[in-house]
Structure formats: C-alpha cells, structure tokens
Length: 125
Image 1 (tube, rainbow, N blue to C red):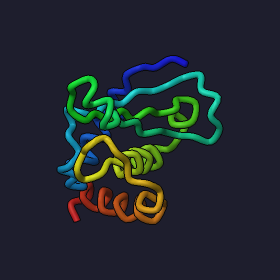
Image 2: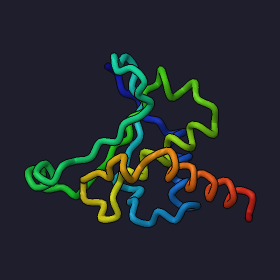
Image 3: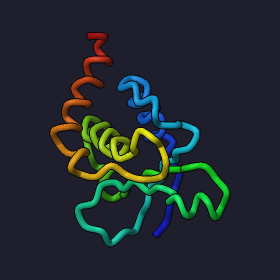
Image 4: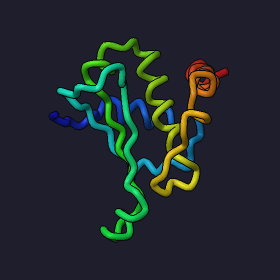
C-alpha cells in the first residue's frame, strides 16, 4: 500500500469545515492522504484517530488522518467527493479527543442534511 498527501481534498475539507461551522475540527491536527493498492472492497474513505493511549505514550495532542482510497474515491463525482469528506469529518467527535462517532450518528440521512446546508452556503442562501 502506498500513501500520498491529498492536498486537493484538504482544500475541500477546509471549505466544508468553515461553511458547516465545524469549529470543533482543528484543521492543524488533521491530515488527508490517498492510498493506492488496498484490497478493501467498497471502501471509499476511512477516518483514523490517534487513540488516547497513543497520545499519552507519545505525549502528543489528538490527531486525525482521513484516508481516501484512490481507486474508489477518485472516480466519484464532485458532489459525492464532498459528501464523502462531510461523512468522514462527521466521525470526529466534538471533543476532538481521538475517538470516533459511529454510524448511528454518521449516516446517509445526516450527511445529506449537511450536504444540503453546504450547497446552500455555496449559493449564499
């Protein structure tokens, strides 16, 4: 598996974070990478957090990495890429502590609500 920085997606995420007022997401403590060569089927992206025990052992603050599976993510439409970024950012809890919000909170319906809000903010509505 190979990993490459995904600066284009980082720019999308910054836009999403600001327009959806996700103030709990510390932009300086999140990174975006594309991966190539995964054997995972049907996975578009994954959110990775530095667990509490790793934070304590390394003496570092919480950090998140969003991995975009290049083979699946890159062929999405722009709207689906934005939805995917919203989905992954929604996994980050409000305490930004290294944990995750699960799919009972992060689901198609909740993503659609935020995507609509994002589009409306683009149009100035």
